[in-house]
Image (cartoon, rainbow, N blue to C red; front, top):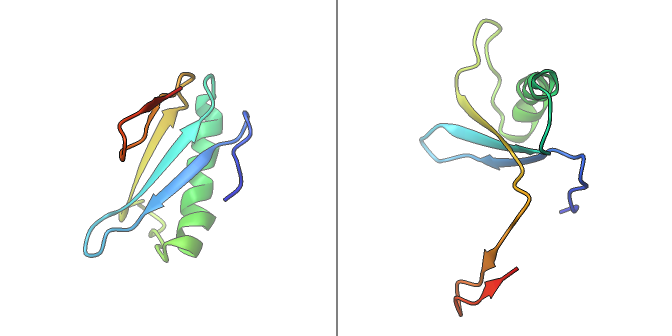
Length: 87
């Protein structure tokens, strides 16, 4: 997987067997509502049908949960094997 650049949006897909598919979108801090709306439209029109085999009907966007959030600046990782905190 390619490393995200500072201006990139990162999309994470999860398809639960027998459940609702979900896309989590992580955008850079300060992303405009207009850019978020364009990204959401792209997901429903092109990305979800190609990756998740989900095609929304023309009047709704059911069948896919979309979560948009800003990327956090400070990240602390914890190794679950040793519980060592990494900054």
